[in-house]
View 1: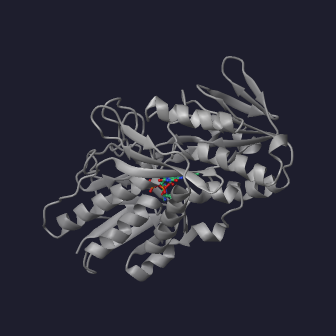
View 2: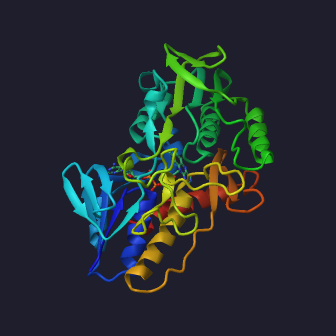
Length: 381
Ligand SMILES: Cc1cc2nc3c(=O)[nH]c(=O)nc-3n(C[C@H](O)[C@H](O)[C@H](O)COP(=O)(O)OP(=O)(O)OC[C@H]3O[C@@H](n4cnc5c(N)ncnc54)[C@H](O)[C@@H]3O)c2cc1C
């Protein structure tokens, strides 16, 4: 009998636990650990902001997984000791035979002083619930969405948010009275992709009168004023922000992190420097082969990585050879308003240049995105 411990009940952790459970006999134990009791489907936060989702539609209780034979423990992980096969939580120590790390990225609002008091964090559920209430009474003024630093999860999400805000205010007949501006450290939208992809997004923003300030370094936010370097100040009535993303600090001293604080893994098997420990999802230090920049972090990749790790681990535990390899391929879809979405097919391990192809806005892509959401929440809970 073995115990596989999974840290993180987010996208990667939930998929890994389910796939492993189906592949392994009941005598093998699977424990899922998370500090929160609920899973949040973050891919639908943009819809929550504009009132097209209610929190209950995108939240699932992790205790439900116990019906499938996955033990859920709610606890904060403090450290991992690979030498002794132990994970230290706030409420005690847990031993493992195999460990899967899927803790996502840490969000650090404090890197932009004034963020916490002066802006809505669009990567946080509670903050988005409050933002939705605020938007209902917002009839006129300037809205700025800023990105604190690179990298950040789901490179298309901020663009999706501004397109949906544009749509939301158009539907309310208020668009003429609202100014929308996005402030990003990226040189152009989606720089991992070919510049033509970024150009196409920029053009669509222009057509919809959404301003774009790129190459920006945000310094602080005080009294309705966002200060950038080079003496630039941006005043607005409402600020939305994406916080700085860091690797998991509870792994400091574990020997598993790279110099930038992300978990180092094999690009194909997701095995860490320790052969009993795997890492998946946003916490990993996967890189684009040609440029060595961090690969895009998104739920679709966390999902596919989880499938690979869980299937291989099930083989190893059953004394068979591991067969599955992660390919860096996936599909991202982002809503663009008017019932449409753009579809990106991604192959970021391509040797010459990461390949990202994007369609024009399509109704079928919007339908596909809704189907993915519905299937994910049904299949894994
Ligand atoms: C606004 C928004 C829109 C998005 N849209 C899309 C989209 O359209 N398509 C797409 O593919 N992706 C999208 N994503 C990205 C996607 O949600 C993430 O990439 C994905 O959830 C990452 O999965 P993960 O398992 O690595 O981490 P997460 O899902 O973040 O889960 C990590 C879990 O670990 C837990 N945890 C962390 N540290 C500890 C600790 N010390 N102790 C205990 N528990 C801990 C956390 O509580 C959390 O539940 C979006 C994200 C956002 C924010």
